[in-house]
Image (cartoon, rainbow, N blue to C red; front, side):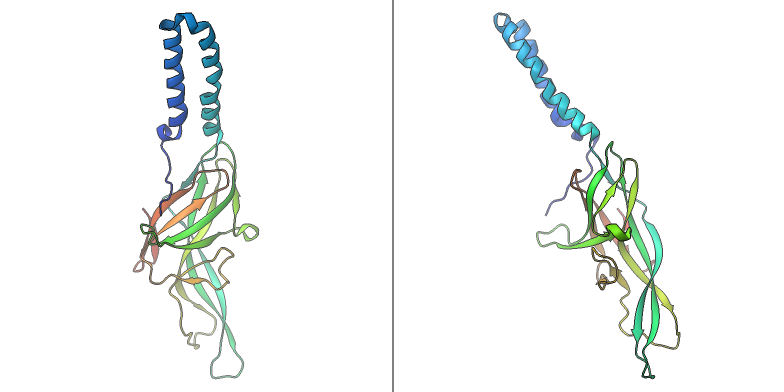
Length: 225
């Protein structure tokens, strides 16, 4: 499966530049080599110049998504009921250090309906694709990003410890988890076996971007490559 990457300035405006050059060449030929037809061809070619200009302006004003190289972090807690020796279950909180992908809009208009994906084995045709969530409670699944602004995508979290009764043994603690598109309480996905993955950001009105992610289990962190 192939995913788009961030385009350079030249790649972004390539189509409009090529079309503009072709029309300029056609205008030159009509004036100097087809003089008897130039009075008819030149106005037509002149009108056609509006096409690359409009295309250039559309690309110039469109939003541009970018994934920042440095992630953000935050501690959050997942409540859990544990049955001990006593008949009444006890409540504890599992603490996780969450790594968030920072997504910026570098364009000149707002980005609408951004979605985030965690992709395992991104170089194969049988990718495992997980939807992940934004930090805004009311916009967990999709989010809008204003011009020159950024939003945070919950991506991977590492287990840090437990709050509550320290005498309780919590069975089957998942050391690395990933959220669903609705948040962390769905329950979260088990990401303990992952070492490398991808993050993919798509939007309704912007080109998608992707980045490779390395999960450092020893240091309990991720690196955006």
